[in-house]
Image (tube, rainbow, N blue to C red):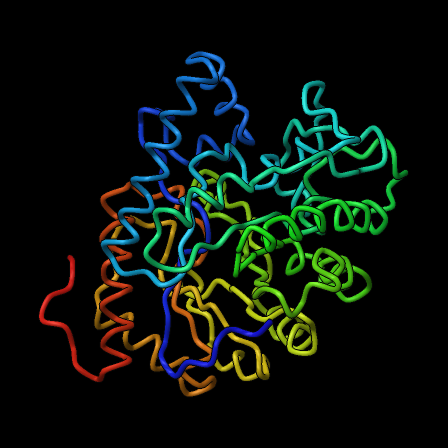
Length: 366
């Protein structure tokens, strides 16, 4: 289902938000490096009951920051998730999350102790339904929920069942997650996002089967919700940068991916555009789809000015109409400080307001 017809530029966050120290004392990069397992240890230290209360508190705080900023499309900051992929994958049948195996990921740029796929991937029951209902209850904007995309799931697990057939693994995951998508829609969810950055890293696989696997996640449900795919170049990784290791996906692949997606059943395509200063002329390939353009750098705490964000939005509007443009961060905001994230969102909202009215707000947040 396409986004409701509007002529204004909207705002959104991609998914994650900084985690408060009372649920995770270290920085977001360390959590990513641990593949979310450090979060599981924190849960064990505090006990599930006490930790659940703190997670609700953190989610409410993240939602409140977005409410105050005036963000149009919101999440709970994914505060309950140690890792955006494993939070879902570990709840599926056929996955052994306890006895992990070391694998190479993201084109060999990193290694992780990953959950093992030891049987056919199947759905066991609701996974993020309560998270959506919590967000919808407290959000002033539209509550969005995120799920990992099939290609990215296939890249994040140790396959001991499918004999290296990533296509079939992705298809079985898509069929399993379809149940969760249907449950979310039945509960009133209007926007569901699939985080599938691996599509950009392996465009040949994306064309061969990745986009088909993605569409299987919501086959037959197209008219009942708005479906988003997030395709960034990868979370910022300063340690790898300092070592001179190239870890980002090639942004030159965006043109092909966007062209293919312009003919897909997806409604919105979320891409990274700030850190890499993407040439936004590539947006002309998106056709009638809506683009969620990253204009906030999630790897730097320095806050973008309202003027710079307005300028970036106006560049994009040369290639897509206002009703097809959503301004957002490049990716999840997990690695930022909360103070920085809060100010970035405030300026994002002010910039959208200026673009929509043509009147520059008196104050931005420095």
